[in-house]
Length: 189
Image (cartoon, rainbow, N blue to C red; front, side, top):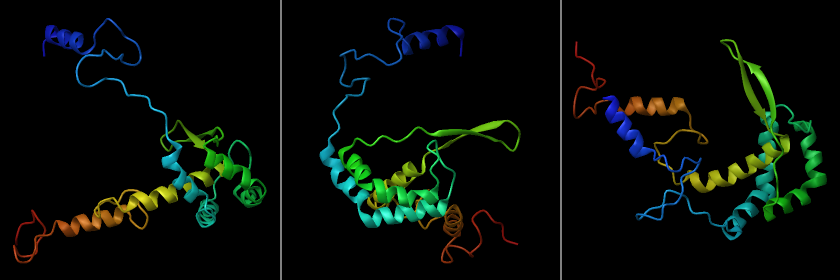
């Protein structure tokens, strides 16, 4: 591509008149380049948050967080300390979750070494925040998992990459009625 053509494309794609971080609404055309900001409705999320706060769901979330173990976050609370903390503070935490006023704590930053040298930043949420994340994930997963394709394996309960590979291999075999049962692309001999 010539320099002249590249310059024209840049001028067409990126007008010089307003170079702010976000595009401005020109009011022209049928679609706006900006997202419309609308107030979130608590009415739609209320049944979900009630389900998040149900005793059985919270017991499952606590068991999962305890089994995952992990380090303490910035507050220093360990997984072993979480059950007693929840016994004492659950009514307040539950009310905050249901009202939408719960604020997660900042994530603790820890540098860990990479195998090839250098360091990688790791974020460690508090144990309480991990518990709440797990409780929310369980409710959302029950709602959404049933809508996924039966051929979807990524990050789904009871499914793994090994199963995906095995199914792909099985699907790539030539059916016996169509061929001699060899792998697709395999030569006879």
